[in-house]
Length: 334
Image (cartoon, rainbow, N blue to C red; front, top):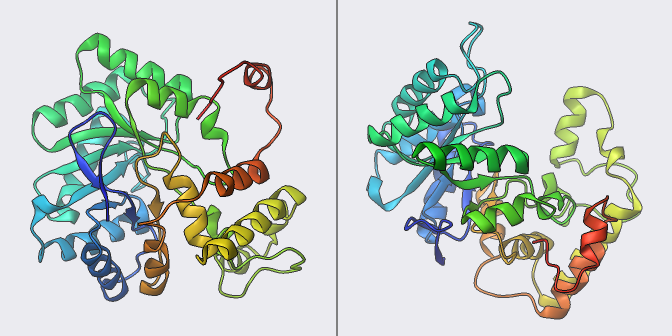
């Protein structure tokens, strides 16, 4: 698996990042981790709130049998981990408590990439950034990143850190796939201008781009993520995605898969992997078989014609002022 620099940093990470949100026990989780490492994967992402710390614990037990410095471990902070007033958010009190808890669960002395999971409107950004800077200076964290922020929030954070001489965000973890391309409006240009690595979550759109879905379906596949959500909620939430716009993208993914002899998952992942701003898509396999399929997104490239087909199928009308700027010569929002 190719190794790439995370943005403008000297940190090298594998071209696919393994997400551990779906890990439920050591048996399957460790098998997936073993297979990912054997394929050359070095970049692993988790969060304190995944299974209320359970994901970090599964990863931590696996790390005991590995050379720690060979791996890049990323986790996130923000989620509410208890019922007390300060058991969530990005205050100094919670961030310091959270990083210590993550270090214990992971069984490691340091975290390579520590990310704020979402913007906290109740905490001054200066307080959060100063705390993250302290953690880097203390050696508990190597790099810091952000997830689920707007472009203005990201730029403000970068500007404040630059002005104060604090450790800046070097990575962005956003939602991005063929069905959700809003990243391209502002977040991707900011990330490219500021030299941030971009590690998108949900590159397969929650399973919609894995090949399980076909035009004309009247219900979700029994083994799909949507089916599990529907069983828990009792609602057919998938209907919000059941649209001509979605099926046009799904059709294009299947067409390119047939042309390339690849699976739909591999095509959709490869499209994200080849986007100019992207460092490494985050895959979230629930089984070793799914991981094996995802790994097939490496080692080959889409042709220009195939990329154009996927771009055209997934294009959406732009709101003002993006649609006006898109008409300018040489405009590339990616």
